[in-house]
Length: 87
Image (cartoon, rainbow, N blue to C red; front, side, top):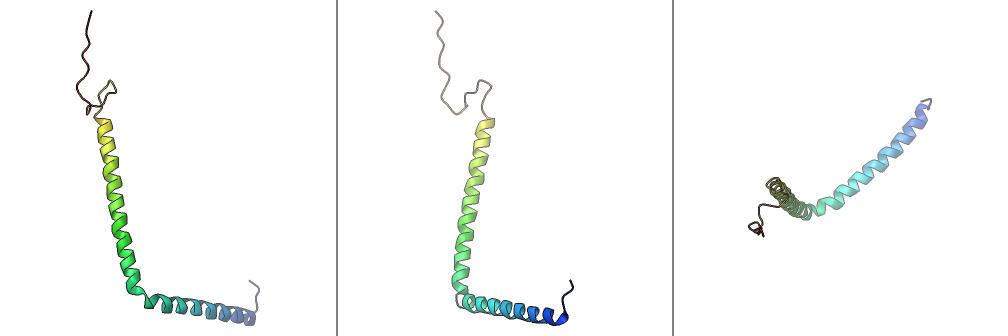
């Protein structure tokens, strides 16, 4: 890359100093509230599983009802057909 080794070392050291400070600070801030984070993540997991289950059951129910329709397009879940009177 045609960069001198001195310049590379200075830039790499500056990058390492910034990265170490950033991750160390995030660990310090996040480490104090790790139990709160675990509770929140567990609650979000439970809610997302419930929503996913409801969505899958709803889609399967709609597909089942749609497949049970007869050829006239009238769903089978409606009442009996109307009587046709001849004159």
